[in-house]
Image (cartoon, rainbow, N blue to C red):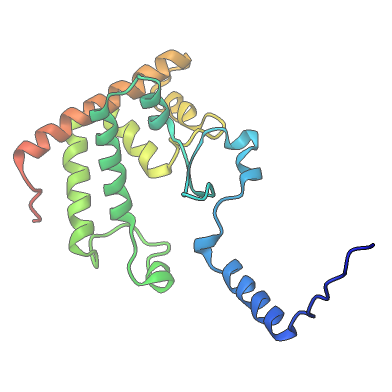
Length: 202
């Protein structure tokens, strides 16, 4: 005797429509997107650091820069890496624009000026000037260029090209040594700056 077929109730069109609408809404929410795993497998993204959530979705990706790589290989101390991050944060603060595109447009084709800068940016600029003055001329110039241009990202050897242009050094190991020395000099400069206390605005 054959099995008895159970009749399935036809799906409710309204329930289907509600479910699809919820799926569309969820797909538009950036918090649910994660990072494209196929893109991360490309050779160009070999030096991208990723983090996953509890469900295993890649939710954060960050390209490692030259300083991360030096630190990971044991060629840069934690203090030197922290010093570079402080300088990068101050450079980012100095160039931060309040007021969006309109505020940015007002400064196009104008030389940099302290007029209109808020206190946070003034303090960042003061810290940058003071710490680089203590770092040593060659190291300061190199680090300022790396941080300003974002050339520390390892894309086609940008940081090496910059070191070569700035110092004339062509040997890969020597270029690394120059950059490491600059980072250690920066850490020493920040230690002096910290002992002096907060930068005063004139």
